[in-house]
Amino acid sequence: MEEILAALRAAGEETRLRILALFRSGELTVTELVTILRQSQPRVSRHLKLLCEAGLLERHREGTWIFYRLAEQGGPGRLARSILEFVPHSDQLLQHDQERLAEIKRERTERASEYFRENAANWDKIRSLYVPEEDVESLLLELTADMEIKTLLDVGTGTGRMLEVFAPRIRKGIGIDLSREMLSIARVNLEKAGVTNCQVRHGDMYDLALPDETIDLVMFHQVLHFADDPLSALKETSRLLKKGGRAIIVDFAPHTLEFLREEHAHRRLGFSDREINGWCKQVGLMCDNMIPLKGSELDVSIWVARKN
Ligand SMILES: C[S@@+](CC[C@H](N)C(=O)[O-])C[C@H]1O[C@@H](n2cnc3c(N)ncnc32)[C@H](O)[C@@H]1O
Image 1 (spheres, rainbow, N blue to C red):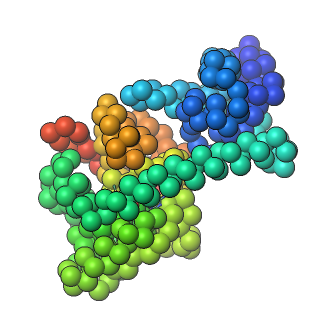
Image 2: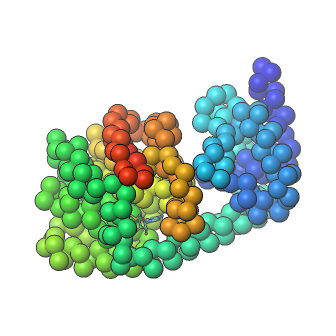
Image 3: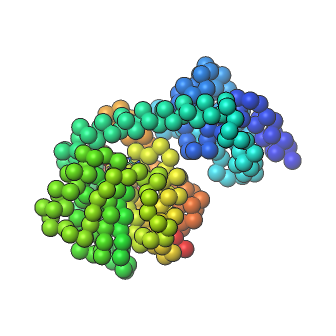
């Protein structure tokens, strides 16, 4: 009972309730919360400390950034989600907070889009810097060798490489990307490679505008580390997957190369197995295979999750 009383006390204050409401859509850093709430960093940090101590939020340090999010486990985490059901979206103060949050996300998306606009032409070279691409590609084909893939969805398709690799194995492929520059390169690449069963289109990983349960395989190849809210992206994936369908996430293992944030628009410095497993579980996917791959500077992991 003491744990729940402490959690209720922590949530029972205006700014802390505003902070909890901001976590309805993913994870945020202190700097972002300071900008949204227009309060000093020490004040915001103190509120966050209290919310973490009460088990309502959890923190995750990654390089020089600390991410906060609603606690995934435990009574206080569940309590936070229940409290938020009663907090009206129409409240004016909360609406202003949401507008400022949307502004921050817009700016971040714009910065990332600019990066991809500038680097679209060089992307195939940049991609091969991490781990040998042939190793990843042959593993991906091996991991899906037992599947009948009628429809493949490649989220954040970039230059369309995954579609090209999978084209002979699938009936139809759809590549989605936010960057029109990347999409035009993907179109040229697919045409050059003679791929006729795949198409690419503009779209956002959080709202894929495709019908429920229509996709056999969803691929996130080096995309999730750009996401503000990986959990929501995986939720959208789960919605689209047919029962028995699979999601494959290829991304970095946790690392400390901070320059990837400043120079390459990464938001996350890789993902731990626990984190990906936890998110998959929350959206109804069962992550039953993880393959680690050693790189020269960065390690890569391949996670395979199934929808039951
Ligand atoms: C690092 S590239 C990877 C491209 C490709 N999957 C590959 O491995 O070569 C990441 C891609 O994700 C796209 N992207 C970033 N945020 C996105 C979003 N919210 N929705 C769709 N695509 C997104 C970028 O435009 C970029 O083309």
